[in-house]
Length: 154
Ligand SMILES: [Zn+2]
Image 1 (spheres, helix red, strand yellow):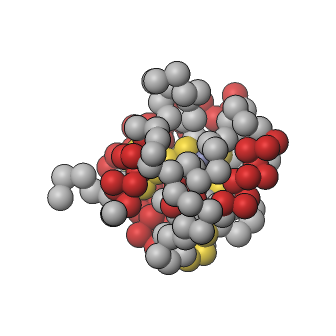
Image 2 (image 1 turned 90 degrees about the horizontal axis):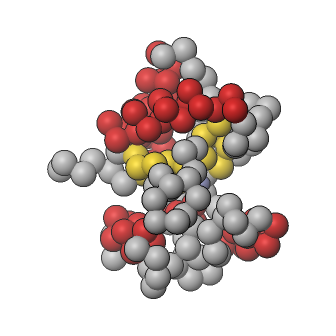
């Protein structure tokens, strides 16, 4: 099953989730702005780098707050905050294709983020990203969460 199919199944809900042992085929470390080590799939990182260059051209220099997360890490986060985190195995972060973007020093839901969220929404599809949770389907909106789906026109 390719990543896009997995992602689509995740969007449709169940039963597209992956098991505790699922790992992306390869992971690399993000070398752009962040305040901790971020890993993700190499193709997603390359697209993110291009998106960040565009953000910088618009005078914005956000940071990557989260990238790949292991199943075990998702268990911890979900236990702590079940409303804002997917069930373990059902997070796009475990696929290595998803990122949370924000400002250094602020939480993900800071009022400072509104301009950034509008930009992410406007630019993401040009770089192969989806804002997965746009508030539809009774899932809380996560305008900071981008998932790499590749170039859908190819
Ligand atoms: Zn996220």
